[in-house]
Image 1 (cartoon, rainbow, N blue to C red):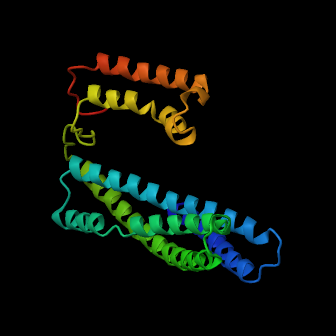
Image 2 (cartoon, rainbow, N blue to C red; image 1 turned 90 degrees about the vertical axis):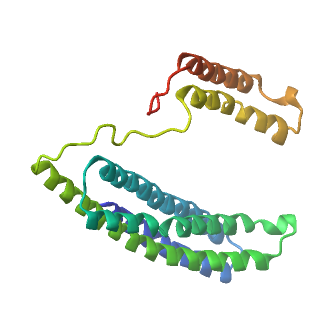
Length: 239
């Protein structure tokens, strides 16, 4: 099975779930049916669009490595460039997932003074946007798969012809060295601790569990040790 088949399977579950959520909200009978359908639909919506985005990112990376490693034909390179320039599935999938999440959150908007009309409008918009995104996602995945198949065929042809692989192809290019990257990792380790201290407890550091501070310190020290070990290194790839 190919990725488009998995995506279609999720879409065939998600589409009726979205419609049922809309109908259960329109004919709300006081039960939790609308709440359960909305929660399930929002989670499934995010999962479906995340699958699409991740696959497009990974396949795009594969195609870029193919472009770097082998002397592909000019016509195929032009087709690849058009593919990278017209990746419209990303923003549509992101907006669809965001709209579904916003509609689910606004279901409780009445508790914070948000009118129910806002939830209705956002919900209807989320359903329509997601149905549009599902159709566009299927078309994008099919186009992407055709391009991957062509790339595989082109690489097989070059292998059969004995074309050499360019050295260093596929290695990530970094604008900073590994020492700086480990330093960023070490500083980021304090993110959860600062969030709980400054946002959740609003500066009351004594209320933060000491285990969180200890864990942050351990992870940060590990990152600092790696940064010290990697100092002076200018390798192309992460280490």
